[in-house]
Length: 452
Image 1 (cartoon, rainbow, N blue to C red):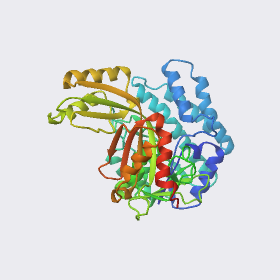
Image 2 (image 1 turned 120 degrees about the vertical axis):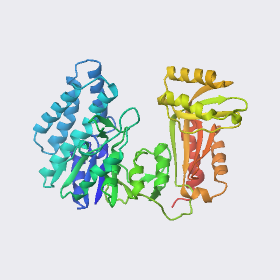
Image 3 (image 1 turned 90 degrees about the horizontal axis):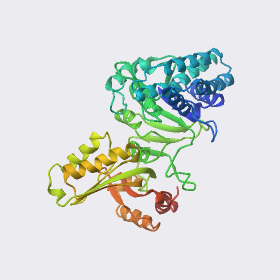
Image 4 (image 1 turned 90 degrees about the vertical axis):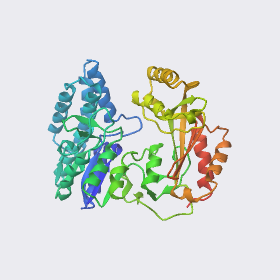
């Protein structure tokens, strides 16, 4: 059995959904299909998820929601018309949206989650209807039938029983069409995964049914060794390990959600990134292990929007529990951290800036000064994390020196270096204004003279 997930651009229009049908029909092993909400049809288009967020905000502000609701319905109407489906399906979608808008607004996050999930949920119903209309026996399955997730306040993840609940899907004779992006708590409350979380849904399904392969269809032929918007004609990656892909996805490789690998990694289901618009291309395979190559670096990625909490205190290294107390302050503000490079008398905690508000930042600085008696505390903003990834790095001497030399040629200062304990990744913290220049310099160093 093959589980395949189709992203937003793959299901953005009737023409794209027809391609999806052809892909699924071309291999009888493709029995479970996870789908996203309709994405952009062109560069200046708006994703359905963004339209739904606008609808949710209008409802919360007690504005007239009809115009925004009709914008969402119109997207599905255009798809239904292009697929020659009964117009009644769009009436059902409109009614579903009205029901969601009238839902409980006590918890704003849960209310918005419920509205956003309408994108995937209704698209799955529409696609299942189309499959049946063209003679492909299909059945829509709701996440309510088994994808059990945790309660607030932690970020959403599937509970172990979700895999047991979904395992019987492996016995299906028809095509299962499953909406991505969300699940339900044991109490029946809808919760969404992070944005782009349909990848996670597909991975959960692939693990639950112990699939032979998890195919993730998007709008690119493969994963590249660097961002093609920054680096000209980067090397294509034909095969990459789970660990390498996880590190690259964390730091800006948007082709695959960084949390989506764990379910399939645990049981060894390989992943294939493929292009809906060019399904014959081999794509990129993500596997548990791969043969060594002559190139130590597999990929280079970057992500901006980081802040650093810098703390200095004399003899910090002698103080038992200092790091725990510092991280407790961040935990109390519900802030997760990314890296903690440190010295004898100072430590930096790197976090994503979008978790901070001016109020929480002020509280953190005040508490660290007063409770930990730090001599100097400040929050610094505007950083990017540059990540160099490769299974071959651990066997290659001088790689950090080569990277540092390449970065120095751009005129940028390295603010932070962190070597992953697995030795699969090397992270450099830099001011984000240098991000693109550094990516280009590192690519030149590790790839440009050895393209294969």
